[in-house]
Length: 247
Image (cartoon, rainbow, N blue to C red):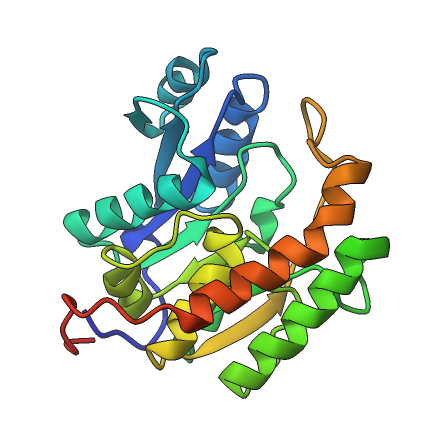
């Protein structure tokens, strides 16, 4: 697949990795449908122990259920495989917890006119998003490293709200990291090393609609070191030699 130009929404897949999100998933699917009614919606049920799969199916989404929890990276690898198999030309990752605003979907897709990946950045003049301490230090460090690697601005490398075009779908269907931060930092590193064009667009981030985030003081203290190691690991990893240069 090789595509540039306005993205037909009927050829777009909205991929929603979900782990125990029965309280918010139906609302997320409904809002996505409201803003992009022609798009396909896939919920990757990542080993949930609640009724996430049943609620998502009842809300009108296609559902793929994994037998156990593999993390966002593994769930998104599944989504990219699905997108490639079904012939989708674009994919947008959306969180199942209601933090991402579906009103930004079109902005992320329009960006694919000239890029292979568009990262939704939470850091822009109109944003109310704030993060401080070790987590912010990590974001700054990773932003500088990835921006230098790609020779383009990547101000929010840990944002999971992003779109992917045909080349990225082809690449990530066979080469997508499942380790910590693989779905964000790791995937961007792989994309850069394969010559994909990365851009960004401003997006809105809300608080979780249901439940509580798992980030605590210890997590924040470890974030900087783990994030840095994740980037080093993906930079040092050799590209998948089984994949040809067809993209």
